Image (tube, rainbow, N blue to C red):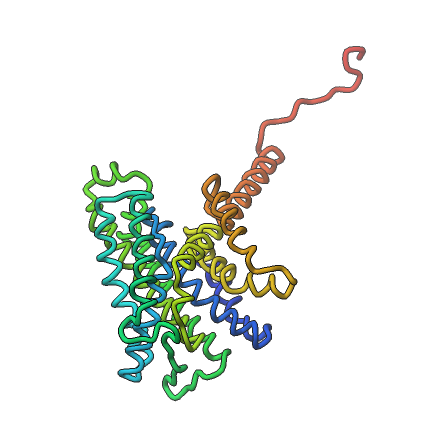
Length: 336
């Protein structure tokens, strides 16, 4: 636990140093990446913790972005807009999660994919809540406590602060009873039910929390971009977020951070290297296949390799210090 805390603090420190080292363009890209990190975290909650396949993350990102824009426009409060986006998406996530009390595996995944399709086709493309489907929603950058978050550096720190609070809320769930119950259900649902776990309730809880986190991601996304329309929240975007989360790893904050970087920064990096950004979905598809066959994505693979190296080093150290003695080789052999 201490190691994970130190690693988390080191990761946070690295993210905080980014604006001091990057160009203005990359600060903007990485601020967008932070929003995607939170979106990937919503996948971590549902898949990594509860073992539920949810193919709808971009639908909640879009819902959160639109509600944040509407509430901010009506109240003038950015904080209230973020909270409203989280609350609305929490409620919608709980409703969708009700289907998870009966459906399992890819059956639930198909339902969530249908939800993403419905949100794209019916809501985002047809003037959802009076928002022009072509132009989308807009949100001015906020002024909080006398600080005007107009430039990309200040916005980066703002969205990073909200992301850290969101990660903390998720971490509290993971370390408390909900997280323990989710993992028990994920690993062996029958055994969890035998021990008295209310499986249906906790599956709804996971879907609701995942939706709320996705709503926060949407509010952060439109805060950074200033505008958001349906092209950012398509069903394909949902599949990309899901695939990126699986490629990076769905059981750690480090995985969510890496997924956000893969989604926002990798395409820009490939463009700078004169490589078409269309290769990104292929990389994610390969990453999903690799994740299904082995460990939990890139982060899980790195951790497994590090554990194997430590174990090998431990065995070598044991032989050298307190392990079994090596057979003696006497001079002269049989002729001696």
